[in-house]
Image (cartoon, rainbow, N blue to C red; front, side, top):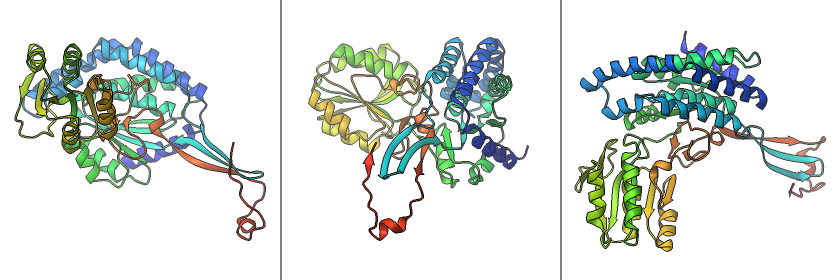
Length: 415
């Protein structure tokens, strides 16, 4: 189908779902979760087909090993996917919330009300669980969505979307064309030009993908290009805590965007050898003089540097970091507060792994991605990040002329 026709259909659907009841949306989500669980073996079969084909792409250098690792869908990931959908259903409806109620004058009341963004264009690489996450978030936040996944996960993406759409077909009240899927490189180009119908583009992939999208569209883009995350081990850090947190942040899922890429260590930290030994034991390759301090390894590789104090650590992070997630390990509360106030990132942590930067772990149910933007939405973007707001004014025949002439006055009373 012509992409513009798909976009037109999505726009129409976005206006229909904007008025859909929370009850119907939740019914749809729970049916999707049940269907995915019931058809998981077919999903795994499709995923194995993608993995077999992706092995050849790794060998030819067309995709990286870290991309291949993100592609695999196993029992744990599918369990989390289903749980995430059910968690989203259990969350409060983010639409039609009163954010402000202000009486401008008697019988003249202003309401600031949350509402859907409209049509979301999602472009992502690998990670087939993205289909279910974003579809569920879009449904709950009353947005329509057009999804374009990478070629390396096409079979899994098609199968999961097929299961989701069959679940929605069983809900008669649910509008058609809320969820849409496209597949070709040409579709990406058309999506980026489609500012008449698409309200927000969300890319989930590497720096190259995000940079290309930002440079080739007039549509607002929400996302992050790099995950250059840091951990600063202060001189007062507890060794056991530092070992546990840094190893987790690097090895629990090395290809994730919230995996730590640079370790900063206070020059007077007494247990450097023990800390480095724990990383080497976890099979982490340590680099003291990297070609760039702004490189995302996506692997069990960790750059490290010794710094004079917390101020140098903050300066380094704000210079070379990507504004994603950064952490400090310290027993010094003043240093922790200075770090968390002055590091300019979407997530700043004290004595915790950077891997916590995730919508599911934040209790958002899931996320459409992590934003390093400083407008609208920042950090893991869940339901609230997929809403905007409108102002509703309810009056009783008032006119501005009466206030301009002084006949009437505003009293601006918050209710």
